[in-house]
Image (cartoon, rainbow, N blue to C red):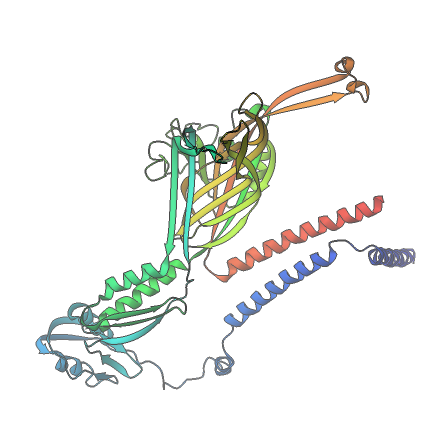
Length: 594
């Protein structure tokens, strides 16, 4: 009885709490509730639609299901079934082609149709072969094109035929460029142009323009990567190379509709069909690129950089590491070291000893067999404070550049020209300034170009960049009386340009981009610390230097079926659900404090 009463009381208390919570929500709804519910509902609808499509694809049509209802022991009729071809031996010597093909189907359930202008003779000796194998062998050796239909075989004539093909691809032209330059300065040569005019009673003017200058950049080193994509133009060139243009052969290509009409011989049409199938299979490969750009403030024990050897100390994570840069960086952009398939651990510190960095090198990269971001983040947190600068995710198709840019563009003065005008017959002059502004990007940028092979490996051209642009006022003196104060840009950039190769799901790590951050901390007694002269007695200033390392994690995931998209959609839904829950809790806690 006591337990039952306690349960009754607890139930009533729970109902009362629920009523109070609902009333509070009705009076003070969360600010992000409507938007969050809409996004969550959209994700749920997308998952339901994908699940329904997969169910429909997995289930056979109703007619097939009805036909499968009888028990398995029911003897089905043999009508409509493909008869099993018997094997036989065949030997012929210089037999007319028409006679050969017609004799192949004699006393068989197959039909044979030959063109009226068939010529040639056939010689062969085959043992224990089927009819299909004989036809394929004759096609490979003698070039007789044929087509298999429901009733048998049709030998195709060598005359020109027309066939329509369908190719699904965007009708776009893309150009991309990725550039990394270490500039040692600029050399400029200024030229003056003086135009004078004078005369009695003339109001002419003389002017000097110093704006005609030639600027030449002195570059210490430079890496310039260009990409260009014009699919339909390249496809036309390839088809013309296969078919040619002699003897009435012709190719009609409509890029807007994706329709290709080819007029050629049967053998050439078969080659065109195979080429289009292989090409479309390659260009439609898709990859999801998930990146994390991290800033790690190193602890006191790791001021020389992150201890990568500790990553494989448990002996379970296979790592391939290498040094970007070196002698080949300007030829093909690849590292001197393709990768070491070894486990990095403290007992074997020389596992990457062969990766010797040149003067230009110094960017370390490695590939993890594990595709888990969480484990790697926990490893970095053991060596410093981890700040996630950006966590972008983008999808792109094969050999197409994807660019992610998060930051701001701010304009700064990059050039100043002066124009002076001196009027004839007068000592007065007019001087004007022409100021040129250039946008400077401050933030995180990442451009990636993937190439996906048949085995699920992805070759990536990666160019990450993290820039911080600050304003610095600089005064330019033109004369004793004329001066100009202009805002100049002071840019701090950390970037790399490399080509790596990884399997789908593996994490590519790029590190070694380090910098020193100077911090000034000031503590003072209120009011007394602001007093002139004696205020220093009540202030405490501390200067510290913090060393940080930039780490870029990149995980390519090849989309080979619909399940990959379902998994990614589920992950996004879970992450949004966690974010929405935290937002609601923050809103509720803020309302409670008020």
